[in-house]
Length: 96
Image 1 (cartoon, helix red, strand yellow):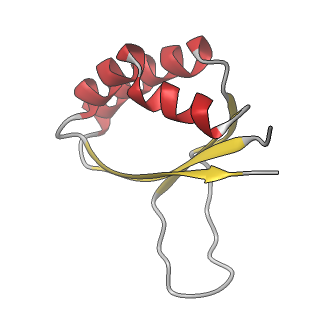
Image 2 (image 1 turned 90 degrees about the vertical axis):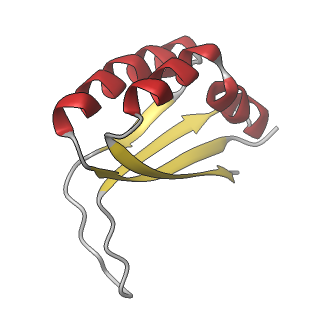
């Protein structure tokens, strides 16, 4: 079974409300056994015209585990807390 990653690029529009999302998403991440590889931090574009904002990279044991996290009641609560506070672009990527 190969690992999987959730990669997100987040444009935060309401930092105070987004803090509430971070609290709930952290709990969901811990509950689902994901490894936080990147959460925020400086981004430097090396090639192309992409202008990422806040970048998050989570590692899961499988694509199924990543999708289960995304569909979970715990992450749904985080998503609801984020509504109106950020623009989320998120994908799951199969790893090796």
